Length: 560
Image (cartoon, rainbow, N blue to C red):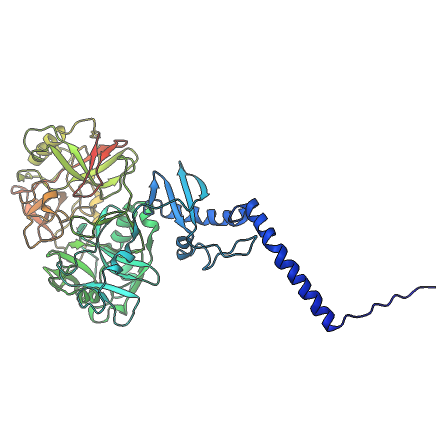
């Protein structure tokens, strides 16, 4: 016979009593348990540490050249930095204890030959470095109408307005170029930058763009997003954000838009900055991104906005949007820009745009009494670095009746260039021939022509001149610098006032004229029998170590 067992149910009072007793037990027992876990796991559990380390590795790999290092390749990264960069959720909890991990905790990351090692080290202290937006914001005065101004319709947007006396602390040396900060946003922590110098001079398009596809197919857009963007170091590329550029007609700029990594300043931004005489006015000719009408594209003409044909070749000033960066030094001034802590160590890892002082053995005074020629990096390949003199030789020269052919030595200017090159030691110069593009860049054709047309003819040379469409084939050296020009330091330019133009390697037409770069930032043409400035282009060897310098115009790298 099966026995039945009956259980008597608990009363509500009894159940409450059991819960209270269990709660008291937990209150007494849990702290020792957690303390035991902490002693076993450390202040933060192993599982949580792995998550933090993984986020820190991603952050360092993306900011290897811009994030501050303490010593060599040791990085101190707060949990707050990882949170603000969306690598961790807004609040971080320990996987074992469930307690929130304080955002002032620091992950110390050491990078050695691509290998990462980690440590939670709250004694790891960054160098005296701050995020650029926070530095700029600290200088903001409430209600300012010049200098740094808060946007009237977006309280998170700040922009610069006024002349160079009113806007004198927004210079940034970054990625091999000097930039001006145009604006920044405190929500997405982004900065909009424009290059201080025009970096090349080209005709912008075959026809005035009236649609997104026409703009994206334009020569100037391809130069910006192919040639220029690809010239940048990968760490700089990784920090550039896609941005919407308004490239419509000037009175309705958003009529045509494009999403790109690199673009041009638009009409409204130039007006907002203060037009002629503003900090964006460099008294040179340079393109902006908007059309004037069906026949013309807008450009800045000695500070004024004006329409220009697509057959004209004006200066190009790239505009990029970047994530907020930490800066290591500088005051944001013209001669002391804000800088990150990145420094190249040799010609093998030098960045395009950086400056190098190269010893000069000649006695002709071509590079001054210090016998150091300052060059700027144009491009790099597997075994050499292409550099252009940051200025001109100390005398104007006749180009020659014939433009460059296979018999380059027949040109008077070539012998001048060779003499200069021979006065640079073979310890530094890569003396084998390299390809120079010597095709014609037609002067003022019916419609604009691509800067790439010059590639239809090439010549092997060990030393040459600037080539149209390459970096620094424009008025980046501020030819014939005067008090009205503001975008270079005259003390950094070799023989800055020797000429108001310089020769390129490209013909302007088929009747003996050569393409030149003018002091207004345009290309022009000059008969080969006339004289103009000479700006040599040479190649340096790779693996040349730098012994000092920062790579800027004021403080170029020095060679061993």
